[in-house]
Amino acid sequence: MSNTVISNKAVKNVAKLARISISDDEIPYIASELEGIMSWIDQLQSVDISDVQLNNDSPSMPEREDRVTEHNMCMKILDNAPDAVDQWIAVPKMIKS
Image (cartoon, rainbow, N blue to C red; front, side, top):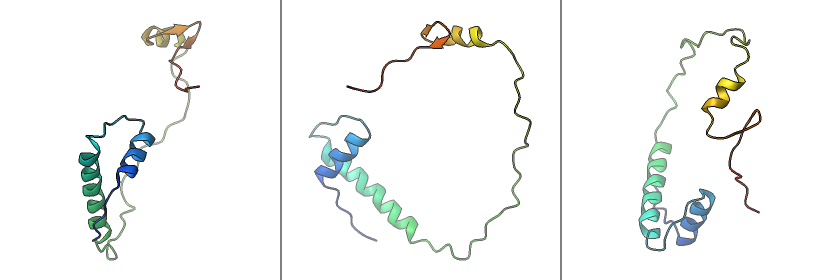
């Protein structure tokens, strides 16, 4: 089992990738939590599963034909949308320019 040390730079990078903002005060706590997660991963990797047999006999979901069962649902769907323009659901712009 390795004792992984997560650097402040790595914590900031993970936060950026996750698109969350964290303060400098939170970095040590988050680093500690990430180190705990990495420790759990190390524990899982050390489990011997060489004798484990896969069970391929589990029941699967019944298949059905993919077909339209209700027609002309557009207006009903748009009534539930928070914002609609013409026959489209309007969503906020997510890409920053």
